[in-house]
Image (cartoon, rainbow, N blue to C red; front, side, top):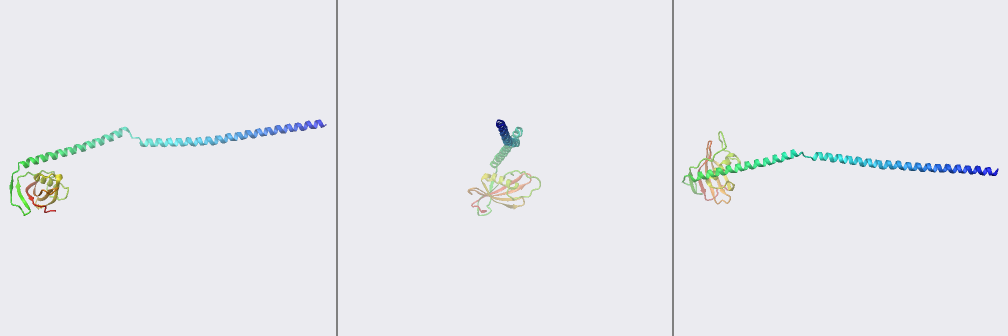
Length: 226
């Protein structure tokens, strides 16, 4: 009887031990599964975020690249247009310079052939006065003429050219102290060089279709228009 009871207790203990072992194994397996799932969730999500970030960065780079790309044809055409404009500007400047040189040469030739005649000075400030058969300077103006005295006007430009022609003062070195009305279609220009070593009073009249013509020059003792 005692032996049977011991055997029963032993069987119960063995069953309990096996049950405890099975439970422990189940808990360990469940823990491992939970750890695996957590790892997949953590690392999988992080990888997804990194992939999304990479995709967004690549997309942004592509957009920036598209924005910055310049078609070779357009850039070349732009450069060609810029070069053409510069060349055209240089050509026009050269043409203008050549034209001015031609006009100056023509004026010098005319001056060499001019016959001058001494006349009475108009006041005590005149050291020498003379008239001459100077030709009109030429003009770009057309139609009825009304003298414009404003700086930069076509009249002032052409008056300066005519004055330079008869005085010999380079326009770039000329100071126009006064350009005033000298009568109907006439003006009187007082000019000098930069150092005022030469001061002139030049009388000019307008000739329709031909421009301003110098008629008399007075060399002044001192500048009376300062």
